[in-house]
Image (cartoon, rainbow, N blue to C red; front, side, top):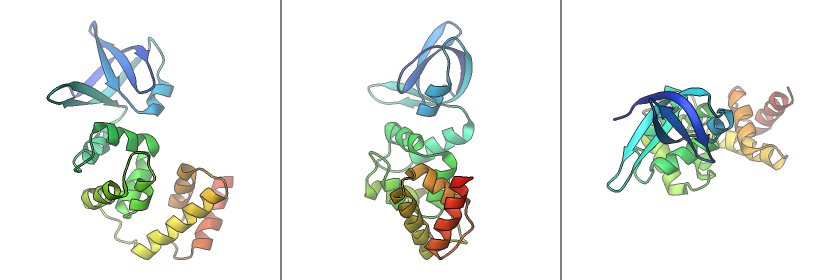
Length: 188
């Protein structure tokens, strides 16, 4: 199995790059943020997940090992394949995704394109222990965070930046306090 590749970018499109390694071109599916960073004829190195199916073989590449590990963890959940796992990682930063799973926030995952509410709950239940559950948080605290995020989105901030700002705020059971502190973080 291929675990790591380093070479020159020959081509890229919306969801993949062609990487030349020792004269061989490998099509590797990557995250959207990596597509924006890569430049033709430049060298890059990628951690690889080699997906072998009955009718196909595909390579999925990641800039760092933690992204690869999260991708592989997501695929341990029934109903989540490589395409869905890549979609989840494209929709959120690794830190935000990890925090959402640790705190049991299935509602956040359900908002990601292509992920059903049922699958988002399976992801949280299946990975919460593997990622180390946030034992200091409780369901009420998480509900307050969700309310604060929804309020920030209603004020015009994106889901991602709202979630990041709320994540950086110290824990509170008061959604108004969370919103005020998150707004301050967003204006910094």
